[in-house]
Length: 244
Length: 272
Image 1 (spheres, helix red, strand yellow):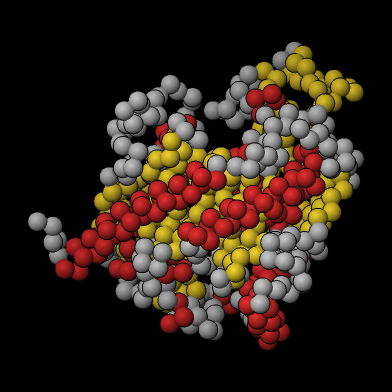
Image 2 (cartoon, each protein chain N blue to C red; image 1 turned 120 degrees about the vertical axis):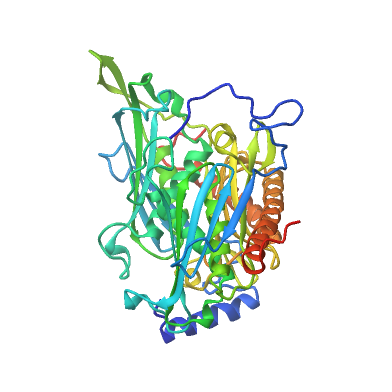
């Protein structure tokens, strides 16, 4: 898992990070909607070195039946990493980490999905991490939200996610793998850009109260950048590639 | 989710009271329930505590033993914190593998203590890359009345503060116990977790079981002795505005400072 302590310079005196980015610059993000034939909705995302597929099924009958809700639909989410997605082979069985991430992703998407329209049904969101880099839960969420929209499921808003963190005593946008290992704090955030609500927030690492505020604001700005890319992916699918 | 009529009525009552700034058990919005901590309750464990947060009760034990370090972290000891909700704690708990809520509970409690660097793990190395001291903190919830996050966190911190670390020497490449030489653990800070619920536009500290059922969203923030934030976890099926997140951080720092004073008084504690 972890990398040995190295002497990499996380932030040089010109404010350039170890992968050449500025402090407020996200990694390269590419999203494609509608990539699977059988799923009702799907999306593929490349977010830095992350390569993630998301597929959505439903609304459909609930199995097992006792999970069904009479007044609203339920959302189920599975975040799963392939054994080959990381440097050392990962056991394919779901780890405790993956179960927790599945739960927080489900809770981040749920406020956006109008489940009250579909009582007694389930919407299943399956996320497969083909290659993992830092920030895989945010990238996974971005793909899952596009896949939900691609499936035509009524939503109040898009859900866009991006992390911020603290590296070399500076708040930076979109932590990569090295910065996650060597940095001081990592804060993944998911945000509904039109309703202005944070639906996922986690933090590992020590921040002062002022840094905590700045970190949330930085991450929200990143979510807004991701939101534009998500919208473009959906427009490209339904209206054809409109880029000049 | 099977919502009974009683649950529905109770929820209406809780919501109506909150509109007037009142809580169902008479507490102020930012007031945690009474916290009672007994330490040394399990003499066979190197540290232990029984914590009551209102009617939520947790028993926690610390076991300390030599272990192999993690391959990439040969220069520090091992810290692992777990949590389990016992079937005798609540009629809805089933035996069997832990569900996602219990897994989240254990991971959030572990993260708060780990990320605060409460224990200086670099002081727990016997032979670098070969042999280190492992500190295992296991929480068992024995009675449920909501907010297990904070109850387990306080039980873990109290157990760690009151534990004694036995001494081992390396003889013939294996750790050998030195009798009667246990010492205080290397404590650097006291992390305090504060869990808040948002019900409509109101944020309450330390929700009890009835309030827990009515929450739109949840926030657990752990702060350290310097009043800095070291771990956050949002939960629940709705979100928070930026202003609410800032309010939660302020509440967690203010409430955390009061709880930290209680934890410092723990009998047999080694508080810094």
